[in-house]
Image (cartoon, rainbow, N blue to C red; front, side, top):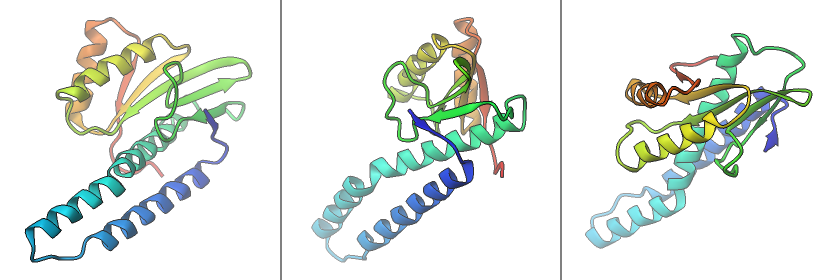
Length: 172
């Protein structure tokens, strides 16, 4: 996990990633009059940008979740924050973690998926199961009302002590 010392710097990094993504998209988005050329260009766009499209949104949601937490009971200056911005954590690490000395205060996971269907729904269950095994207060940050409702159903059905939080708007 990476230490998250400065939220403003982390947000600046995400903004730089967004700008790089959009620049790459523009450079690959020239118009075409030919079907094969157009399909080839779409493949190039997907190969060059798909992963970053998902990861940038994930990073942003984690940071918005941190802002949400800090406006509540988690603003203690003694907290040390850690994160896995690019979903690179192992099966034992959350997306966001707060420590107060050696004590884990909270663990959070985030999904920027818009609709919890198919593989995304199955992955949500596994993520919530993983989060349930972690120490401290537990939060699951989501973007949409539909995803929040599905996550709350899974949490209630399994009697897990996880708070599902739908992040809307800007928490700056």
